[in-house]
Structures are given as C-alpha cells and as structure tokens.
Amino acid sequence: MATKRKEGAASTEPRKTYDVVAQLRFDGEDYADGETVDLTESEAKPLLGHTVKPLKPDQSSEG
Image (cartoon, rainbow, N blue to C red; front, side):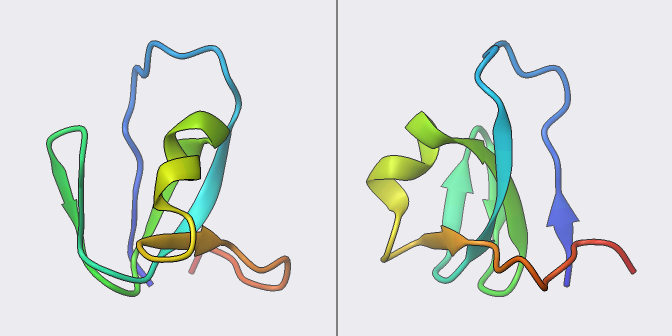
C-alpha cells in the first residue's frame, strides 16, 4: 500500500492516516483507491465514508 505524506503542513492539528477508498485530489496531490493519506480531523470530516475511511489499528503504512 502506498502512502503519500505532505510535508510542511501549516496546521497544528494532529494528523491521522486514512485509507483512500475513492480517487482523491487533495492539496495538489492525487491519491488512488488503496493508498493512504495523512489528514487532520477537520480535513477528513467532509470526506469520511465516501472518499476516505479511518485506518484500521492492525493496518500499517510501513513495509
């Protein structure tokens, strides 16, 4: 599973990793179904359910 991380984000809100479940264009980056993206809760809220879903505790973006 691919993970893209946006460096230098201006927000001080903590970021969490979400699964991308539908094609997403966020902050100038394209994310395909099956990738992961790091978002703040505020960024994720309007996307939850149809575009992203919370990463399950047993999933890892490493490896």
